[in-house]
Image (tube, rainbow, N blue to C red; front, side):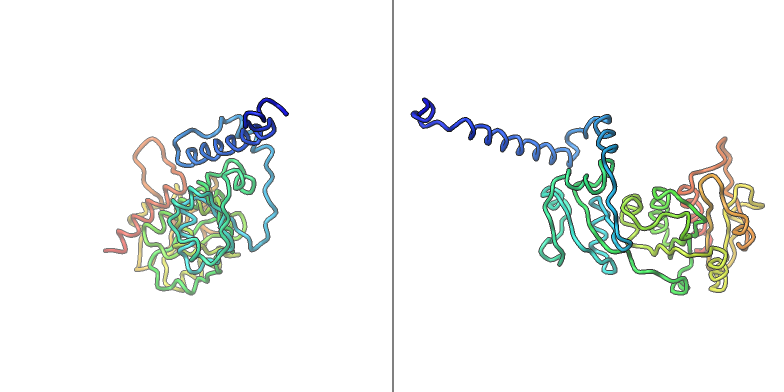
Length: 296
């Protein structure tokens, strides 16, 4: 019998297990502090290495992963959203401020690394991930009572579309309408960029933009395409009591068919040295101007 055993000490292998236990506690404590922003995230080179090793999961057509505290909370509050499973760290669950037992879906307590394995190390998930089904499909005819619409002609960047959604909700637009091709589908990136707005405004993807503009016109909307070479300033182009603003893709702008279909083309007059804006900024300015017209 060893001296340690004679004096009531623990075997060497128990010491190793104890060290492992404390290492796990230290990692958990560090992860919690990182979630709260109290310590920095891993060095960029480590994150790049992890990103290189990560492979996105094969998602089913009806499977969507949403992440981020504000995004997930908005999704949970949306009665039209069908949630499947919530994966959340203990700390994030407290910050989410929801009753886990009342959600009616499985709630799994995980580590940030568990979520990283699904979303990738670059996703700013804040320790929460919600598996859901896509939102129900909306139809244009259901929007006839809304005085302001936003139409996107092949805007491809989900970050821009998400930012546009936030502005659209802020200015009370009835929907964001876009094409099925060359536009982002409902996703975690889009929802995170929209910061909850995806749950608050219909995101309608149509097959033919010219046909959709024609349908909006039949519903009483005056359709205006934003173009840097537009013949008149936007403020003097508005007409009627319903307005649909149409914005083109980053760089290319409106397609020729779209130009020919809208009721009018207009420009945003900018007196400064820079004559073009990011599409999300242009959308916000155009919606503000449209609201001023609709109030008159």
